[in-house]
Amino acid sequence: MSDRATSRLRGIYQAHVTANDRICPEHYRLRLVLSQFPPSAPGQFVNIRCARAGAPAPAELPWPRAGLPRPGQPELLRREPLLRRPFSLAGRRDRADGAIELEIVHRVVGPGTDFLAALETGAVVEVLGPLGRGFSVLPARPRAALVGGGVGIAPLLYLAGALRDADKRIVAFAGARSARLLPLRLNTEEPPARQPRPNMCAQEFAARGAAAVIATDDGSAGVAGLVHEAFQQWLQRTEQPAEALAVYACGPEAMLRALADICTTAGIPCQLALERHMACGMGTCQGCAVKVKADTPAGWAFRLACKDGPVFDADELVWES
Image (cartoon, rainbow, N blue to C red; front, side, top):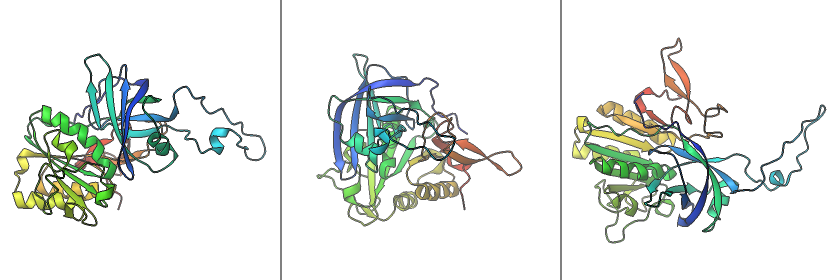
C-alpha cells in the first residue's frame, strides 16, 4: 500500500452553510465554513449529522425481556437519520481570517441527503472529520488522469487542485448516465467533444487547470458510452507513455474494476477511492470491509474503507467474482 495522505487529527465541528446550490436535478454543491478544521487531503471524507446542530440526539430505546421494542420516538417515526452520512471533500480553502471553507457535492437519494438539499444559508450542521486516507500525488509522474463517475467526480475536484499545485499536467474524465445528471457545469462556448479529446468544457475542472472529457451513457453530452471506455480510447489514441502517467479514480465499483484492469494491462499506477457505506467513519462498526491481497493462507485479508481507505492502490484489491 502506498504512503497515502492521511491525518490522525479529527473532531466534531460546527459548520455554517454559506451556499447550497443545485447543480443538476439530483446533485447539490454545499459550501460550509468552520472556524477550525484539521489538515485534510483529497480523497478524505467527512461524516455529517443530517440534523440541525443542537437538535437532541435520539433517546435510547429499551429492549423488553419479552417481545420486540416499540419505537415511539418522533425521530424514528419521521424517518430522521440516526447515523451520520459520509461525503467526500470536493474542495477546501483556508481563508486569511483563519476560517476553513469546505465544499461537498452530494446526490439526493434518501432522507439524509433530502435534509442537506433543503439547508439554507446560515444553517448550522455538525461535521465529523477529516476521516480516512486520501490520494497520494506521485512525484515521479508528471501527468495525471482523473476518472470519475457520478458523485465520484467530487473528490477529484479537490485532487485536481492539489495536482495543479504540484505542477502536474491533468486531464479529467467525467461520466454520468445523461447530461442532465452530470454534477458539473459545462462551458457553452467550448462544449464537450464527441471524441475523447480533452478541452476546457467543464467549468469546475477548467478552474483547476484541467482539460476534461465528458462521457454519458445515452450520448446526450460528450462521448457516448461509459467513462472508463472513453479513458481507454484516449489512452490508445494518444499513446501516453506509461512511465509518465498516474491514474486516480472514484465512482461505481464496476467502473473502478474495469479501470483497474486497463491500468494493470498498461503498467500504469492507479489509485481508487471506493464507495462504501461508512456508518461510523472510524473503524468501529466494521461495516465497510474491503478485500485486499495479503500474506495469509487464503491470499487475502479484510481492511476497512473508512480507516485503511477509502483510497486503495488498484493492484492490492481483491475483486469479488
